[in-house]
Image (cartoon, rainbow, N blue to C red):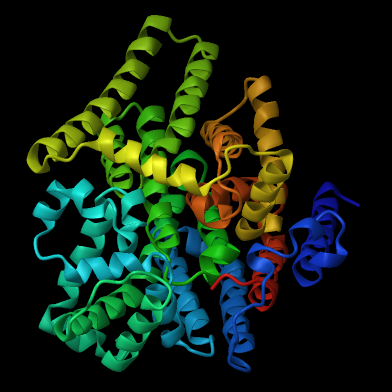
Length: 501
């Protein structure tokens, strides 16, 4: 059997093992310790025959597209737009396949902890004034406990969506997707039964109705925008087919496709992938304009969630790997130092200026905000972690990212490490090894037990590019339909057996 045949056979075997993990986790010795938690709870009720139709159409379109790769690769961004559109349609169809349909989305949006963001966004009158007194606004309020852990960017984001939903044109367009006022009031009452909820008047109820409609329309779009970043980065540092394959793989990441009404999947992967991809391009191509764009994306990410600082565990190793590459190529060391110092300096300067502007304009103190947010988070996590927690977190993320994807990424990380030792590493290898450093940092220093499917979701876009690199290098394009089919079938199994609602 050829090397390619062995890889395909191993992937088929891995698919079988992953299916067993999802279908009968309590019968798999390595997994049974985790089988009672997380996504192994009962999956959501589904409409009969909806999923077979959705997945049959999706898989048919994807396989037909793979047969036309030479023609589609000639127009990469038009093809990327097609992949993006397919992802949006698939996401909306998966929402529609739930027994509650759009109602299940609205229910999840309002009753989850993050429902607090939507409620507060329709209640505040003056956004700059609220941000200026943000600490007083969020401290000591049980109904703002999630905002107390975030930067003001989250409130600004939903406040902006609220004003979009107030436009008469948008309201007319979004009316079919808006829940009834009675349903919103019922959900608010249900939420109030288990948490402290501020009073929402009748006019604000209608604002909330249309905010929910705007969210259900924009979240799928935001969720799959990273596809364009994946395609662009893969094409810029590899080739067009690599980028397109990476974008295609993002369609079948289980938690991304199956999770609804959650900004950790709709917004954070987009901001993180923009930060990392633009930094990579700007550093590799010596274009500081992209470093500036990366710093702006990082600032927006940091303004929404303070955990954005974890991206430094990617950026710093990447600078180190670029340094090694340029030294190995015989470039003058003083020039290397100056260029990379310029990259780091520009990134830090832009972030510093934006933070200073925010602090001066709105009297926002990022140090105070970070310190208080961390104090709340520490009260929710374990002070002492164990190997069991490390294993639980890593397994939970691998399951949400896709066990087959995880296998491909691990193999590619090994290949990239060997190429680095042999001084043959390219830009995608440096992306892969920096991604591994970021993951290792999250595993080693994270204190959260579980929920890594959500907390580490921003790793997904570049993870798909890394997995695509392995497939691109190892399997001829005319046989790529087989692993892609396995990824799609793994998503089918996940929908029926895992709870990612």
